[in-house]
Image 1: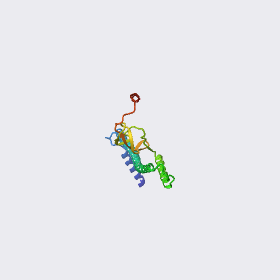
Image 2 (image 1 turned 90 degrees about the vertical axis):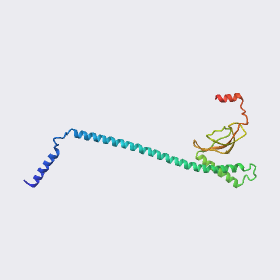
Image 3 (image 1 turned 180 degrees about the vertical axis):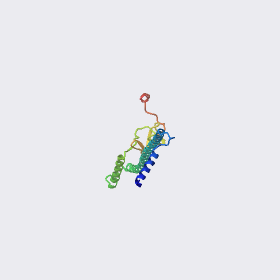
Image 4 (image 1 turned 90 degrees about the horizontal axis):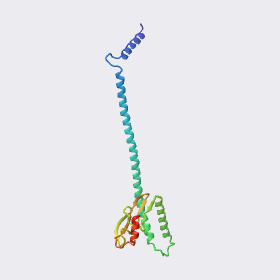
Length: 197
């Protein structure tokens, strides 16, 4: 017999020994147990993947919210600085005499033009004044810094204009409120009608 045929016969004999199960092992139980173990491992891996996916989505959501919060804080800080500038221009325009013979003065016209541009810029950023004319004190929009003679809880004087940006308060209006020393001009019938409305 040639050496090649002997090697082939030995290889076949070894293969038969590997394929043939040991007589004391149950062949039907081994694959079932292995299959069940693989299913359990697969379920664990899938559950882990779902948790990781949910954690990743939560991280993306939190990160996006953090970015939005930082942008809003930066925007708020810049707008508050611009409001201080707007207050200065408002004071300058209010203190200018109405019957000034130099009304056509280029310097004064320049100040008014800068004030108008600043107000336009604030409007583009959705910054609006909080109206206080003929309004009662509202702690959400107003900051009371003192009392003056007047009707109870009525705004008597505005010390610093307040602003909103979008639907949020950017800066509350500083006001003086009435101390209640002046009686309300409403008649009892009008007060009753207001109470029922």
